[in-house]
Length: 274
Image (cartoon, rainbow, N blue to C red; front, side, top):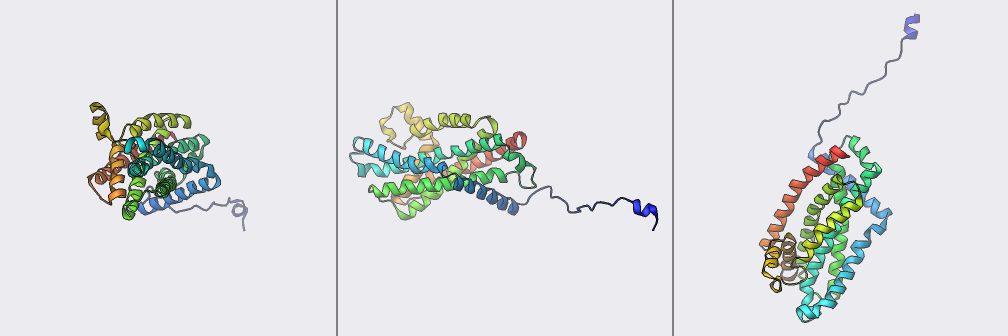
């Protein structure tokens, strides 16, 4: 054996596996659910995150029903079919804001810097966070329905299931708006402030709590084109009559448009700013 052979440096083994430049649809879905499981673990370790979805529907349902029920509908029992769908839509849509605030907090902590460097689908961390919040929407929906039934509301059983699915789909679509806002602003408190400025007029200036016939003409025109009013009407038709009408189709179409528009914008902002 020669000295040259002994002094020859060892050649490091190279990993010849190629890193895929793109991720398939099946892997994207799987990775998104994995990230969603991470979000559920956060809820498990911080159960106080469920404070709003547990107590808000209870407090709002009791307060609005007993304060306004007699004045607006004549009795509490007659007001329940009107107010329960309105409280449900308001609660779940408002809850979707948490998506943007938590994304902004994770980005400020540097969590998404690691996700960005992994060989996973670009949408997986974002979609996973939004999927985890679906659990919050489901909890808020169930609690609202349970409180309403305990107070004497008798909804259509099949319509109840349909309304639950519809509200969760629409809330998931709306949460992409707040996710984009979380990517664009610098503080979680800013997401909270901006979103409430948008949601409060949309939820209260709608048919969620009162019939628009009592409003001025110019305000009725806004209520009729308000997407929140359309969703509330859809939930009322489903829960009270089990009827799948044109409002349900418009709500689903609106949800599809929101995802188609805001999901790519959110992913682009995430890749640029994360």
